[in-house]
Length: 580
Image 1 (cartoon, one colour):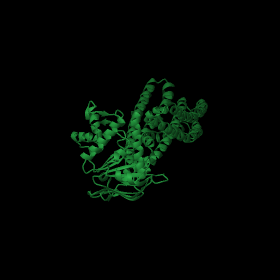
Image 2 (cartoon, helix red, strand yellow; image 1 turned 180 degrees about the vertical axis):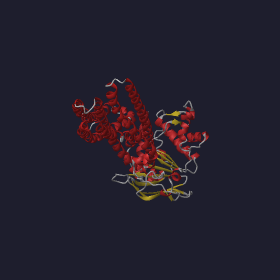
Image 3 (cartoon, one colour; image 1 turned 45 degrees about the horizontal axis):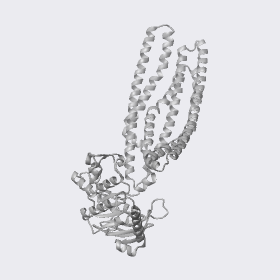
Image 4 (cartoon, helix red, strand yellow; image 1 turned 90 degrees about the horizontal axis):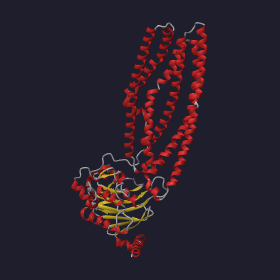
């Protein structure tokens, strides 16, 4: 369970020192009105310049000591809050990386980014202000009232009436505003989500000429946020005028009562000034306290959202010890495998069974949404099956540790993802200790020699985030090289050559076959020509395996495969004729 206090345990000293020094600062601040009263009564009234100078030095000393206490408190509060934010962010990032594909799909990328950034930043600010003000403000309010009674009990009765009235106004407005601020936060989340989606999908938006529509949607969301902020701002803005009316009325009462008592000789002019100063201090601190509670309310809402992510438990648990690694002729075996995505009405895969021998090339083909990618994602255990089992080297994948299993598998996903860094650094994601020669060999097999040759710095050429300075085909070849450099026992190419032309695709498959002896290769493709030379072709339709065999066998026995091949050959012939 996520608890803020758990992350502040490492900062116990800072969490104690910060509020204590703030209380010290407040204590010195409470003495200032008494010093001012003494200056008026004994210095100015008696025209004693020496006394005035001496008390002036006392005021400066109180100010310097208060400043020192304030800086010390803010230093320790900042240290605790920044450390808290770092620890929460680190643990949340680590927790997200432990989640399986299912949990990440359910939460959504935009949500996770918001939790990692703005929500934790809001929590960090809340911790900072809490350590600085949660003791200081109440201490000043009640301390000022007590000090007022030490000055004059009858005049201090004004405080007894004014403070409850001020509290009702301040906290009443605050309680009314808190739900509104929560709605504002949700509206802000929506604007942030739309901002991220628009920036990430800028090319798609322009390709479909959706700029005006997206601008309009964004303006509507921004307008909604603006209206909500204005409304809650107006409610909050009532705090200042109402509190000032009460305080000014209290000040009038203090001055009137003080004037009467001064005239009667029961109270000095300096005492009246001290009472006025105490009332002003109370006003300032109540407003600070109200703002603190509003900030804490926002922080707690953010804390709740972050806690929801921490509460997500990975549905795929790693085996604690793993197994002894062995090699078998039956490299990958599916036995009556059924799998359903969370929230889906129908299984994505139904009763799938086949065996892939070591060194074989397995082609997987079928219509869009038939479960091709889902099938290969079960091998490295990105998802767990509902029923049946997936075996690698005759061992259920659930018996392996994640490293044991995934270190033996090279995966090239549908979307070619590269990271900011050099080409060599990206390829070495496959194996950190790979030499330049091994990297170049992997690039050569992936048909990426021309990519390296076209770059001024070769392997040291810098890649922008997401590989934006590369074409789609270049990105795909480098991601294939990244998988090949680790020399995996099982290579999964999930539609990894979709951006390559037919000639390059053919050369890639030939190079993999000739230069990676003993590797079991799974090729997911929409092209029949890409997998026709495979040792075994699996045909999927609506999550079911409707064919399994060689190209020739399936042409004879599988109508679904035959239709795919004939339709693609017809389209290719039509394209050639149109080209002529």
